[in-house]
Image 1 (cartoon, one colour):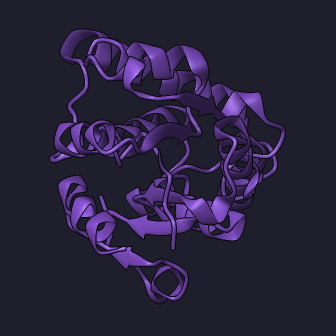
Image 2 (cartoon, helix red, strand yellow):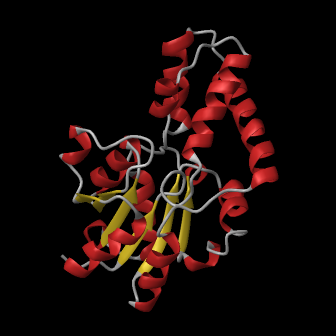
Length: 217
C-alpha cells in the first residue's frame, strides 16, 4: 500500500461543526413547523442537496420546502459562527504538520461550498496547507456518491488507491470508500456502524492517531 496523499472531509472531521449543523437544521425546521429530530439531522451529514431535498419531503410531506429550510439553517449557523467562530478538532495541526514533514500531500473534499469553506479554514490558518480544496458546489453529484473523491484524486494527479480519505460520517465513508480510497473513519457524533466497519480500513478516536496508521502502512 503506497499512500501519497491524505484527503480530509471538513465538517465534523477537521472542524467541530457537525453539532452546530444538527442544532440549526432542527431549529430552522422547527421554526417552519417541521418536527425535525436530531436523528433526522444526523442523516443529513455530508449529504448533497440533490439527495437531502427528497429526504425532507419523505419525512415532512411533499409541500416541505427544502431550500427555504436550508437557507434559514445557513443563516442561523452563519450568525453563530460569525460571533463565536469554529473550533478545530483534536489532533488536526499535529497531523497536518506530519504530512508536511513527510512529503505527503493533503486535500479537502467537503460538501460545504467554496465560500464557506474559505470562511472557516482561513481564520484557523490552515487553508494554505492543502494542495486542493474540493467543494460540493463544484460537482453535480455530492456525497454519498464517489464523485467528489474521484475529482480530488484527479486534482492531485493520483489514483484513489494511493489516497487515504478521512471521514466522520456514514455518507462520507460511503463516498470515499466507493471511490476506491483507503478510508479511515474518525467518528464525531455517532460511532461507526457495521456498514461502515465493513468498508473502512480503520477507525481512530482523533486525527493525530491517523499518524500511527500512516507509519504502519
